Length: 547
Image (cartoon, rainbow, N blue to C red; front, side, top):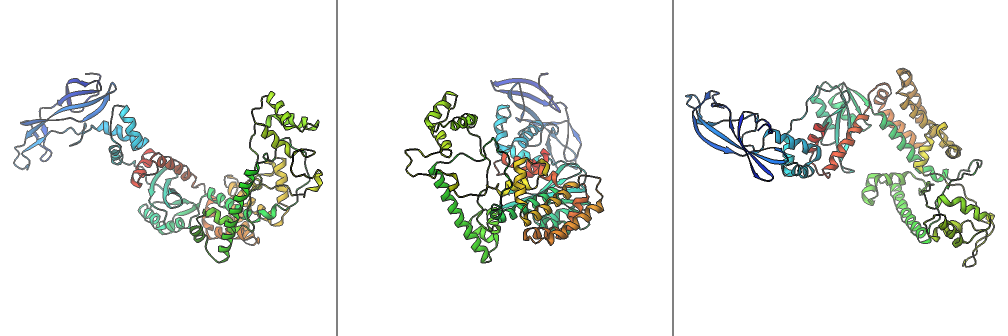
């Protein structure tokens, strides 16, 4: 009997094995009396007996069932409306329950970590079988954690269905734990939640106008703090839109003085003719879509309307709307190739005059090359000093006959990363690219303003900066940005001016909404573990209990 856990309020009489996987524990109440649930008086006159068979925690990897004898007692109290009542075991199981408290808790804890179906599969192997529906029902019955009232919170949106429906996560920034999940990201919902929490003093948020209005309506005395990560993100989005518009012009800028030749490849190996034709056809299709977006913009259509009518992604519509020319891809770094380890051998043989692709391939094969002759032929066809005898069209032998082209420029996203790096962190090639771009007056002005603002936001972490100096520097930057002459930068500066108080607080306050981003990552993991099909109440409960 000592192998089994105690049964609160019960006395075990016998343990039998029903089959190889099931045990039955026979038990009855310890006391010879029971208390009436109505009049709360103790009675000992037994009326009758019946049995309950609830499930309990497993023992020795076997499913355990209790055969619990329940007694009914007479109640002769004159003021009690009950004639008989059954004895209860509140520390063991509830009325009408088919599981003990400890089994229900074990199943619920497993379910809130894994979800319904995964928990049901695991519980069957742990000798605690349960259906997925029952697991979810036990999760919903778990009590939510309680804690002290929050005073400093962060709010951010999370996607129920990305691009369609969104909710709001509320995080206690002092205790680093989530507080609540709201069903949408509207101002009214946030304001109603803040009115129930009148003690809120600080609200860290992204730059959403809905959250700004909701905070102003629900907690007008609270300090609103713009999230510094979102400030940097909006800055990157602003300069990326500008680069997408001016990238065709920047590609025409002359390259700086040539530097020493690099030993590594700067472009991919040539493509097959069929691949080149497919790529050209794809470019043609996208150019038609670009012309369509520009025509709709010229007709006065909004970006949302173009998104709905064309079916293009919102980011693509915005990029095409701001681009003066069709934004072709820039230079992309070449990927690794199985030919790379043998480039030195190929160049040495080419310098000696060997232009026979099959001969070069046989030499590489002896050196361990596992590719085909076609790869060697593609590498060689750009470097031949004279055309092959079997070539149908004669190519010009003089390199000066080919039209000169400006060296390729990285794509807008890659170029954005280079422009916002510290100059001392760039290698020779990246520094040359940045120098080439900064030859353009507008580019130099925009990049300088962007670097100044990023330095202001990142410099907030340095406690040596006085608050008044930081606010004055931001105001001075804002005045310059609003008069810079570049529409994208001026629009960004106007949006910051409308949210000036929250930006000032971000540059002077230690609070930020970065914790909300980490909590959203956890929320995404939970949502995906339930295949994205969890209702809000279940997702909210799992999210808050897990935290």
